Image: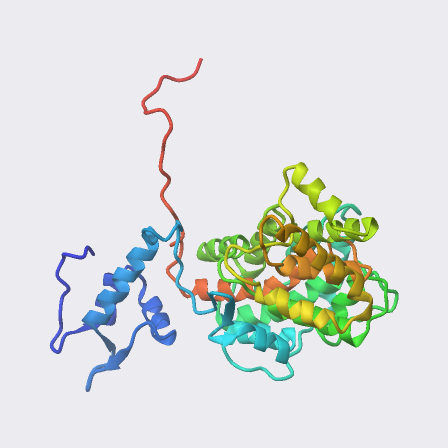
Length: 418
């Protein structure tokens, strides 16, 4: 319905559920989903069997939906998506209105994931996967080449886990949450162990540690890993998260939506930054100074990895927290000093703050992990956020993320090619 077309009014200026659905261009079930998320308020009329809605409120929501479908003019973005999950504001970010840094410092990753999914506290939350599902996922991952990337392994594990879940096409909140709680531990358990005495139960960070390094774990390092997972659980509509929402908009099941995110994460402009920073730090440690390393990167025409973030004009809050925690890890001191040398050397030309990729690189380089470990940590952590966004998208009108192409090719009709 266009803005200038009159809206049919019932006595008292209210609309029926059917009229509201028609005005919004959605199904009646979606109208009630709007109500449950606080986007619309309903009232049951005395003696009536259905709910009614205020015309002005419905019209305002319809206008907002149209603006978001077309993109926000002047915002520099081609697509605006309404979300209640993450807000990034200046140099802070929030998960469902709660400071994400404080949440990550006070709660383990599993509880942060549950908060993202449900908006409810979940003390003692724990994830476990059926042994049969883990075995299938492990066999699938073990069949890959030893040169497979972390995203390759995690994507194959997700597909294998999906094939073992007969309820994967059930997109109800209860079913999706059940899948989420078994998918994340399955992804970790399917990774090849690096530590002979690796854990298969207990906190997820403890299980992941034994897949990333052969060194024994210490409490300070485990706290860094668990906090990193919680901090990285979501970050608004990053490219991989948008891919997840597009898949969920098409009603792909949870495993498939996560696979879409993993596919985008493997792009060199999204998931590889911490690995590049890891290698750079090793070069700085080898050279004893950042000066020749930075000069070599710039001479090759490359950006210095681990510096600056377009969403944070100042310091990346995730990096600040991880650097602080890494100060309690004695073996991280050389890599910490190397990172500070990189920031100081680069600041002579451009004052850029360290971002979370550099902090992750300090952690992985000082923990005896491979350069790809940061990508693995990022992917496992972000799976929680991807599932939160998929859940949110399942409550929206299906296939709404369908931009129109602006055709600039030759005008038809043209003759068939010879």
